[in-house]
Image 1 (tube, rainbow, N blue to C red):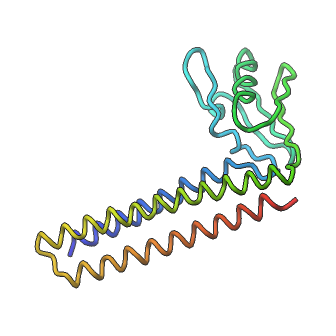
Image 2 (image 1 turned 30 degrees about the horizontal axis):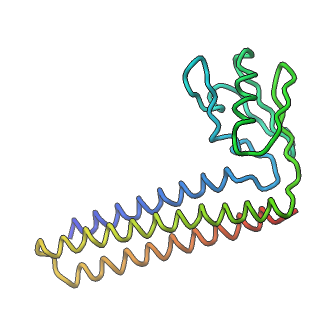
Amino acid sequence: MEEIQFYLDEAKTDMEKSMQHTIIELSRIRAGRATTNMLDGIVVEYYGSPTPLNQMSSVTAPDARTIAIKPFDKKMIGEVEKAIRNSDLGVNPQNDGEMIRINIPPLSEERRKELVKRSRNEVESGKVSIRNVRKETNEALRKLLKEGASEDDIKRAEEKVQALTDQYIAKADELSAKKEAEIMTI
């Protein structure tokens, strides 16, 4: 049935979106190396309107322990520095009047464990999102049963949804293991 395929395609799309969101959230968790996407969540007050840092400045990682930020408008350097200080990154930006440098210190064992815990929470929330997609899709499929779809077709579709769920949960676990290894590597 066409409607069944529609729900299966929609489920796959939604599960993929959940995975992409999880990947983005994990990329924001620093693993002892300087990456520019660590600053993706930072918003700066730019002449009265909140603006993402990467839209108002050039952000680069010249080496593995440093991030350099050069605002396009030099007058905003103080605001950028304040936004970084107020973020939950736990870094100390240094302003030289032209650009801001952030030195990424090596992580302590305690901080590494905290980050692993945070990454596990992000992955778990991605898994919950994937399971919610499965639940919503199965509910939609059961409604089709009431509208005259055959029980066998619905059963097969539910099995496909479960297979998709298993596939995305496995990807999430793989992602979690990679991130943990990245964080724990000194």
